[in-house]
Amino acid sequence: MDQRAARQTTVGTGGPAPTSGRDRGNDPVRDGTDARRRIPRTDVILRDARLADAVRRLGIGIVKSAVRQAQEQARDGVVPPAGVADAAVALLPSTFGGLRPVINATGVLLHTNLGRASLSAAARAAVREAAGPTDVELDLSTGVRARRGRTALAALRARVPTARGVHVVNNGAAALVLVATALAAGREIVISRGEMVEIGDGFRLPDLLVSTGARLREVGTTNRTTVVDYADALGPETGFILKVHPSNFRISGFTRAAGTGELAALGVPVVVDIGSGLLAPHPTLPEEPDAESQLRSGASLVTASGDKLLGGPQCGLLLGDDDLVRTVSRHPLARALRVDKLTLAALQATLTGPGNPTTDALTADPEWLERRAERLAAVLSADGVDARCAPSDATVGGGGAPGVTLPSAALSLPEAYATALRTGRIPVVGRLEGGRCLLDLRAVPVEDDERLAEAVRAAAAER
Image (cartoon, rainbow, N blue to C red; front, side, top):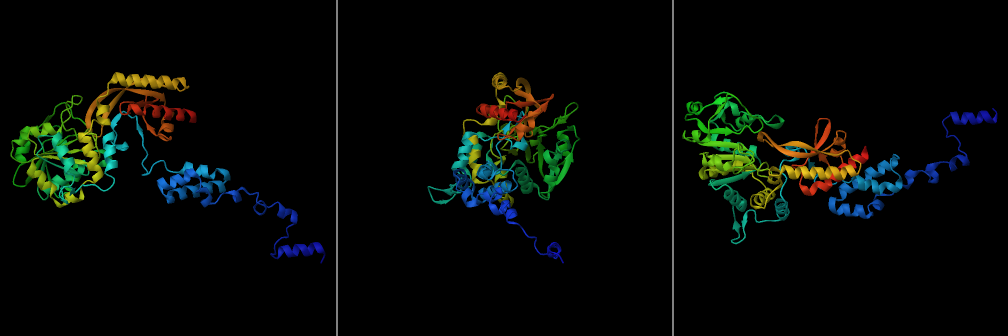
């Protein structure tokens, strides 16, 4: 066998093919020219001052995860080895809790998908103060246990003088569930067919009430229910009469609804779910039911949400007859529905503080909003952005004031800006109308105007 055949046999039998010294010298992994060998170790990257600070703010687990993702990007050639630390910083979450702050430019003051009411500066400060140990259930003067949230409850009672008793649970639906369970489990709730409502995400009021063990006694028709209809349905099995504010729709035309005063004269408890959390009449919303007026008309109990027109944190309010409130608040279910100290602190600050963003948005002067929109449009136009001032109609949202529109003003941009604004570093959510992206200013605090302009400039840079 000649030498060439011998070499072929050696290779064919599975032995490693010989490698010349020249070939070894060109191996990028062996000679260190492969960029992957220059990717810094995790402990080296963590010495970067920005990442060291992030460890203190966010925790080592979150930061290490970002570093590993950045190293993987370097292995895939997406970022250079020298840029791993920068990539890790860019991958860090911008917030502690996972929820990103958003500028609400939709024109819906209480947008459910955006968390409804924004807390006031006073409420935010109160939450920070209550984050540590507090006297939520302790009387510091005596050293004995005290009523939970007593100062917040006192503030609520002061805002609605007609309410002799008050209680707070974790949301508006919970308030109604607690009342139905405590007063009508195994009994009947008399309710108009026109008030058997469904709200967002397929949530149906009848299903909620039936889940408490109560039976529904439906009276009247979709468009007309009289006090006689209620009276004919009353009997020994009646737990209470329930009136529900339709919240997100209106029935017009040939209609009739029995008033709270008429129902109160029937001699059984009348529970009124006003929904939107308006505690007293408001000149901007003359047709919106409020707690004070309903109680003065004879309602035994009023239930409402705290994160709607009140402008506070998510919670459910119960106001009315002292004995009924005591019965409801002492039911075993009340413990499962109670609010935490942060909610109590935010609620009290909302009730006693100098104002809140919801009130500011509700009462904003349309001419002032137009001047803001014009100024923003002029500033952005000077930067080359197709920005204009446009008239707009805002709404209350959150199941409040159905059919009511509030004159407003908007920054009008090309439709293509919508996605870039929503997904940007400063998320801005507007609405599309007439082939344009409208950023309504009624729910945008004036102090956010510069942030809004910054977000628009960033969106323009991506186009």
